[in-house]
Image 1 (cartoon, rainbow, N blue to C red):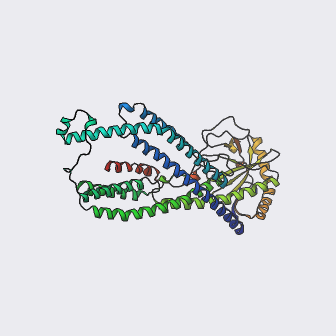
Image 2 (image 1 turned 120 degrees about the vertical axis):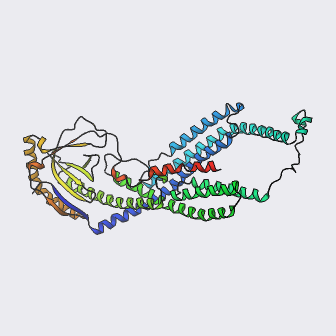
Image 3 (image 1 turned 180 degrees about the vertical axis):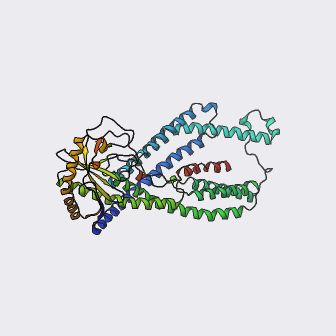
Length: 477
C-alpha cells in the first residue's frame, strides 16, 4: 500500500537521554554568557537613565533663561545623539553560540564606554556655563530673599558689593523633629522611585509601593501624624519587594538562556529563520507568569531538539535511497509542524514529508511544479495543486510513483530504526488518484514569527501601561 503513510516517531530511550544531556550542557554555557550580556545591557540602560537625569538636573533652573539660549539646545542635541547610539547598541540579535555571545557582550561594553566618554567630554564645557549661571542666579535669589526680610537694610545699600552676607537668622524658627521626619520621608520616596524603576518589579509590588508612597507623603508633609507606622510598613514591604526582584532576575536569566537556545533549535533547519531578542522583563506581570513561560520554553526546546535529530536521520537515510537533502516548505502561515520536500535526484518525483509537533511523520509521493513567478506577503514559499487540477498524464505518472514507493518505505523504516528512530504504524493508504498532488515553490515575503515563538505574554500591554504609574510618584514628590 503506497498512498500517504503516517507513523508515530519515538527516539530510543538512550538516544533521548543523550540529546537531553547535550542540550543541558549547551544551556549551561549559554546561561553563563547571557548572564554577562544581560549585566552589560543593564549597565547601558543605566547610562541612558543617567543621561536623562543629568540633563534634567542641569537645565532645571536655566532652561528658559535667555543667557542659555545656545547652551540648552546644544545639550539636548548631545543627549539625543548619545541616547540614540546607546539604544541602537542594545538592538542585539543574540546568537546561540557562547563565544559569539561573549563577543556581543564586549562589543556593547566598548560602545557604551565610548559613548559616555564622548558625552562627558562634550557636556563638560556646557555644564560649566550652566553652573556659572546657576551660581549667579543663586546669589541673586539669596540677595532678593535677604532684601525682603530686611527692608530697612536694603534701603541703605547702594550697591550689592557693599552688603554684609553674614546675617543672623534668629527670627527663623523650625522643629528639628519635623525636619528629620521630612528628610527621612524624602529618602524613602527616593528609594521607592528607584524600586519602581527596576525592570524586575512585579505589577502587584509596584501598586503596593505607590500606595505606601502616598501614605508616606501624606503623613510626613501634610498631616504630620503616624509617620512612624508608615515608615515601618515601607520597611517590611521593601524587604519583600527586594526578595521578589532577586527571584524574578534569577528566573529571567534562566528564561533568557532558554529562549536563545530555543530560537537556535527552531532556526536550525528553517528557510525563514527568526531573528529577534528574548522578550524584555516588563512583558511579565508576575513571577509565576515568567516561570510558566520559562518552563514552556524548556518543554518546547526538548521537543524541537528531538525533532531536529529525527530530521537529520531522515535526511541521511533519504540520501541513501537516491533523494536530495530535504528542504523545508511553508504551505500555510498557520501551519502546524514542519513540511519538507525530498526530491528524487532523477527529478521525476519527490517525497513530501510532514513532521507534526507530536512527532507523527507522514510521507507521500508528490509531483514538483516549476517555480511560480509569484511572491507572497508572508513566509509561505510553496503551494499545493490538488489532484482535480492536475492533467490525466500527471495523475497517472504520480500513481505509478506511489506504487514504487511501497518498496522503499519499509527500508526507510528499517534504516531509521538503526539510528534509534522508531516508527510505529498509524495509517497506511493504498495508491489512489485522489492522493495525487503537486507542490510548486513560490517566493516567500518577509520573515514572520512562527507560532512556536508566541508563547504566553498575554499581559504585555497591561505591563507596559503600568510602567506609567511611576509618573504618579513624581507627582507625589
